[in-house]
Each structure stands twice: as C-alpha cells, then as structure tokens.
Amino acid sequence: MSSRGFDEEEPATDETKSLLAAVSDADVGPRTNFEEFTDDRMLTSYDIFKTKQMKIKVLEVSDEVPASRWKFGDRVKVTKILVTIKHLTTQQVEEAEFDIESIERELAEKRHYTSTNRWIPTTDIKNGYVLGSRHTRLISDASALDYIVF
Image (cartoon, rainbow, N blue to C red; front, side, top):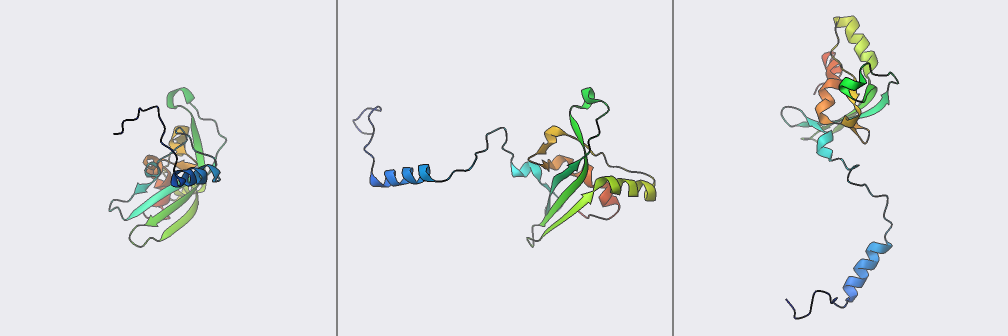
C-alpha cells in the first residue's frame, strides 16, 4: 500500500491509455440488460445418457384465445416449432421443423388419442426458444409417431 490517499489517482501509463481508447472506440452493439438475459442451460434439454442436447425454437403460434386466463396465466398455443438436436459425441447437428397441429391430428386419427399440450406460458418462452422443462410437452406426439427419437 502506498503512502498516497485513496482520492489521488495514479498517473495513466501508455498501456492504460491505449487499452481504454481501444475499448471506448470499439463498435459496441446493443447490450442485453439483465431482464432479457437468458442462460443457454435453461433452453436446452438432454437425453437420459447426456449424449444429445435439444433446443426448440417457436416458429408460429396460434391466435386462439386461452379459455381460462385467470387460472393458468398468459399462454400461447404453439403450432410450429424448429427442433435442433446436437449429438455431443460426434458434434453433429440435426434440425427439423414440425407442425405440431398436423402431427396432433394425425396421432388422433391413427391412434385415437393425443398427448400434446401446446399451450405454453409466455414466461416459458425466452428469446424465441422454449425452456427445456417444456420440451417433452411439445414433442410427445412426434415422438409417439417416431418422427423424432430423443
């Protein structure tokens, strides 16, 4: 610790000046505030062996109004999704677009049941992606018809 007080500033060196100039002159894009920040781990889900990871992006939602907003909160009915699966052992990435509405109709016709609940709370959609805890809910019918194996 030096004998100088805390209010005194150290003289700026050439190294400090160039670093500060580089940071202030750089083109800084729009910054994300804390409320908008979403950790990538929240958006991914893993298979049971942790060899695959999945992300689901919402491509289209229905304009249908939920029946009981007061009980379940604000929700949207998802109709189309983009599923991205990354194989962690080979780093191979697969993407597929699914029309959940048509898959739900096909399953009801072929198997006489459907298990999809396409109503997702708006708080569970971050930056266009569905939280990992809701993935099974959206892909259950596609999985039952063997369109997706995860």
